[in-house]
Length: 177
Length: 407
Image 1 (cartoon, rainbow over the protein chains, first blue to last red):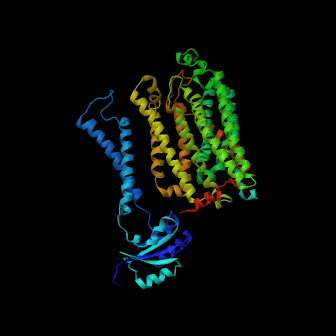
Image 2: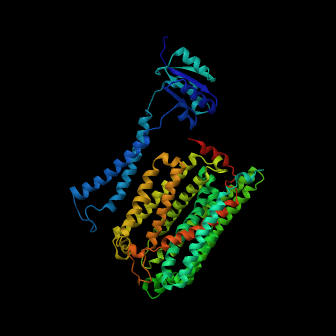
Image 3: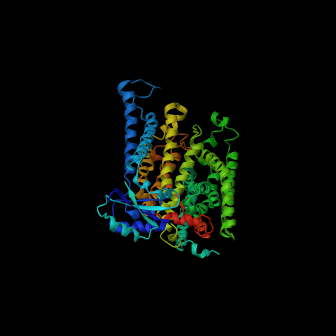
């Protein structure tokens, strides 16, 4: 082969077909797989064996970090660095510290959610080989695609291609690097 | 045409109904007899009855509010819980009957009725007088009844709808009606909360009070709906309809309202704490001293912190039994919250002093909520059995069932 192959891409007409095919791909033991659809398909995570994202834990950690930052900042300013009596309240007056601490909790949790999501998805990604297949543009309109990467330990060009044809797709494409 | 028999509530509800009426009726008679025979017990009996009424009434009126809400937001959770909300909203008449003892005994329960010379009470004339207080209470019930009446009427017509267009039009009508009605609903709840609970302390006022009850009663309602659905979900007919994701969605709403409840409570506290004015802080001082601080801490930990952290996890929200257990737990804490709002208020028998926690607590604070609850649940279950458990002709019923099946 003179050209480098990134993987094999199969095109499907309906969501039901693509989910059934994804199940078969997982049962056949392929791991480095991906699916593309114009709208979210809830069954797809389970069909392809995609594990739950760790994003919720990142968001929680971000929230806790925000809370501690908020309280720590106010403690540093009002108790340690520049103690000043405001309205006759004690230096460390927790009730009035809660709104800023709450805001920082939300802010940091929000940052963790957005940037964590981008990081876990590997975004921004200016180039991805699947776009070398012209028909892949239809993934945002009406077609469903399944991908098996050459990196997969079970990948064998001839055999995997035959296997993908057996899933009765519309067509199977070679995805060039 | 749809076979309504397929969606009838399970028969065992009628056994629960009889049981609830037995407990509620017996305890009500005991409390009533005590209140009639011993005049010195009347204040406590009415305070406890008010506690039970505000707790259970909050669920019924909360059901009306969430019924209005789900017509505005749409969503699968609203379609599958609509018949529970409707049955809850149709309990307004029995809530009025349960309110009659408080109306009759207003001069035994509310200190301001004896303080007509007090400047703050004089200033609030004629608004804060017994006649106007009773007039307004009747008005609140009429308004709530009308809101519930129309939404229930159209929903019943939808069950009889001949075709899809008619069913869709009835749904659209309900949604249009719900927009302005929501505004009036929150206003009526605010006025009722101020009249029935805030005036227990004639000196104190808070502009956050109405929202405390709107959020609290909404939370009560969601917990009640989750407990009901979990109970019905593994029996015909709802076992074909309710799915994990319905509980997931309702769990998210429980989380949201838990946070809103805490947010409103803290807002009220922060403003009064920062202002540090004697006329406002008395309310919190009487709820921090004499053992009441422990109740406040329990509320912060178990009405907010614990449910908040548990509801963050998806697994709890998706498992009906876990979510329902938490819902019942929150409902118990809702009762503690109402006890914390009602019981430390000044009493007539102590000439306006607040009692310490243990002096204030009476066996009737448990018996009266059970009495009110028994009668209310008896009526509620009766209403629940009158209609199919799902809105059979709702245009979104199919989508709602499909939505629940996801993992």
